[in-house]
Amino acid sequence: MNIKSAEFITSCPDYESVPDSDIPEFAFIGRSNVGKSSLINMLTNQKDLAIVSSKPGRTQMINLFLINDSWTLVDLPGYGFAKISKSKQEEFHEFVSEYLTSREQLRCVFVLIDSKIPPQKLDLEFCQWLMECSIPFVLVFTKTDRAKKGGVEKNIAAFTEAMSEWCDGLPRIYQASAKTASGRGPLLHFIDQAARA
Ligand code: GDP
Image 1: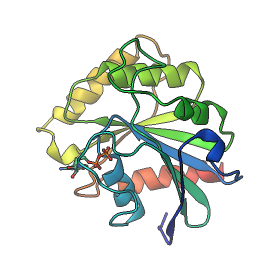
Image 2: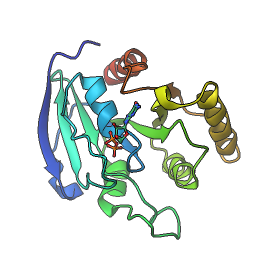
Image 3: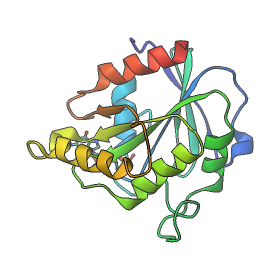
Image 4: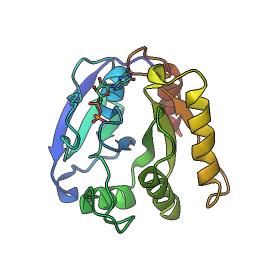
């Protein structure tokens, strides 16, 4: 898919503010600093569509962008714990879970995982929650340019092994680097196919 246009639509502080629409949506989520803004900018070929911030937790709203006048990219706030774990180190916004569980045109959630680090409980818990809610998702392992040789594969294997304890079929897995733009083609191809389905 060629990206011909990418426009900011709106930022929503709650689910009620998310505008009605019948075009397919693809949401991006991950722990703060996972490289979400960088990935969104890389995919859409924009310098600062999503503000790249090195400060964790800066994006606290649901941000919508219209791509090619045909699908909506939804930038969700970094997830935390409340709904999915007892720990409250980060707040998992009620409205994010409301969006994820209610939005009919949501085709797929891209769960971003930092490829440099071993499986994190929070990421696994979030994936488990998505699965329990039957929300379609794929995994995107980010910052692959920064991992040591073989490190990405090792962390992916460890992550999927941990997942296999509670899930039958594993989700699709992508690797991406915002720095080198590797992984851009396969991710856009997947969106293109899923948007038409
Ligand atoms: P967000 O908080 O998830 O939106 O993360 P950002 O996109 O702001 O990225 C967090 C930090 O990781 C920034 O310093 C980025 O420059 C860096 N970063 C993000 N993606 C990549 C990547 O693919 N490769 C490298 N080397 N650094 C990255």
